[in-house]
Length: 210
Image (cartoon, rainbow, N blue to C red; front, side, top):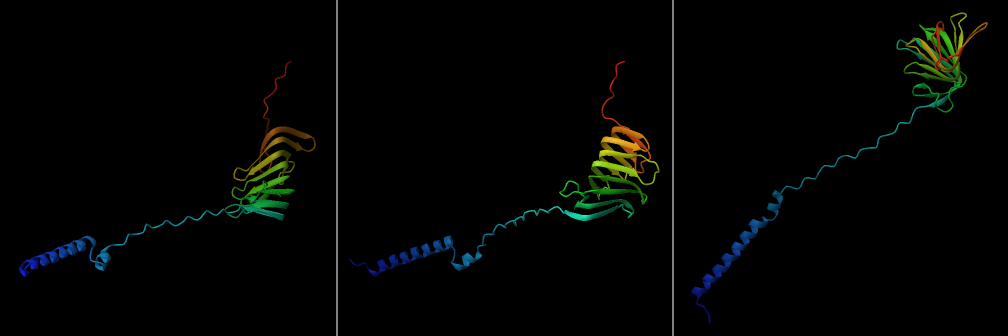
């Protein structure tokens, strides 16, 4: 049965109202297309830390020198020592006896107040540029250049400290002076010019029964 026009009109208006309400709810929930999307801020990316470069290993500076002639001076430029050898291994600190091809047939001249005072020879000689210390190993012999008649001393190892003006040696120490002076010990200490000596023995004295 067909409804009269007065009844069909309210139903049509009701459907339109429902569709309009659904559209408004959809816009409120999801935004208005491009405009709503433009208002949203993009997510900020987390900054990445730069990759750390591996530390570079600096190789030690060393090399073998033929006809070695090394001069050590103090802060004022005054000569302290001079080392001569047929060949030597030179490192960061000076003449390195621990490296291959260490100093051979070396002669170290020791100076006081700019004047040559003594000479040290040995199988191996080391000169430290930082401390100006001279050290020797293997049949090391020291003799004076300024003190007439001063004895010569031999030891297995020997060091000279210019800041202390002392030569020290250890191991099979033998002090000799012509014509017939010979003194043996385990250690010795002397000034640079080899004028004053002190020789000691590591072994305690042996009691002799009477």
